[in-house]
Length: 168
Image (cartoon, rainbow, N blue to C red; front, side, top):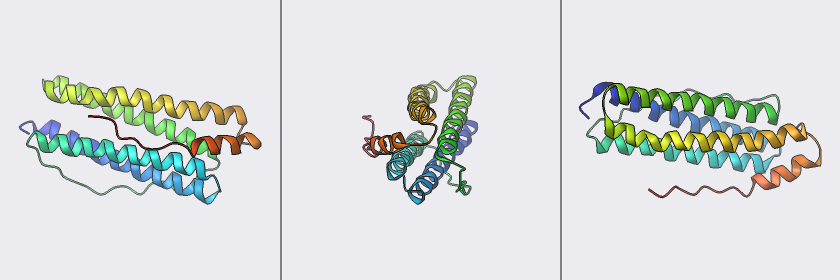
């Protein structure tokens, strides 16, 4: 990759995606610990999606002749005050990732790297879907106020989620 500014930024995003996977695995462990296995499953699927995203960046950097540079992944938080607080943290994290993707798009435009801009459009669309999926869970949790039999029904619903790698 001849553009070192973009190469560095893409490597940073690869690392951010790996951190997201790590964070969601930590959240999965939290939910398992409090007996919400469906929520734990939902978070494991989120982690797999983030790993998939990271590998898209990994492959793209390589395809463009760049050098993938893996760096340390920060330790994620391990405790939340409630399931609601945890899912609220997921939404905030996804909004942060959306801002990172938007910054990358702006950089690709500034650097006049049209191929990278096109590559990043998949992530722009993906982030809309990510935020929508989290909002759907969050809205149900808020209706339940994190209590009652509805939590068990929602937990069962979330246990059915599976990871399906998007078609390329």
